[in-house]
Image (cartoon, rainbow, N blue to C red; front, top):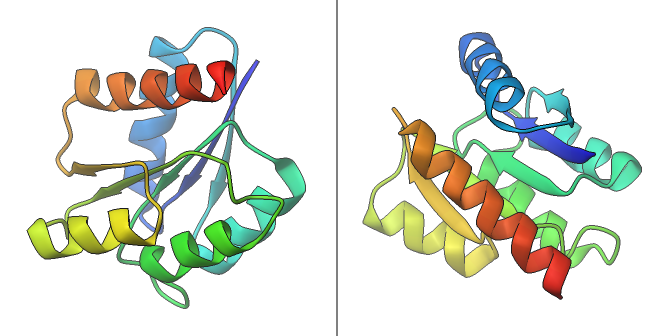
Length: 127
């Protein structure tokens, strides 16, 4: 079973991603967090296979959450895909420098998201 944590403050985006993942991934379990603080707690306790991280959120943004996830030994190796409408070259470079594995711009292409997830999952299986 593939465990996916989606850290996103927008309920419509969470629902859209849930439907996408349920259609595209066989046997997946999805957890949601509304901000970086919730995302950190969930990642540490649940240990997902991949994290989909929005960048612009209240309380703790995705940049801070990515940095914190990479510093914690229990979450340092979990693949992170930044998915944000707030994406531009500067923010993408920042997210990657902090430890995101990939960055995707909203509105996203379904195939691009699935390729990114599969790439991360396959890299983890061979590591």
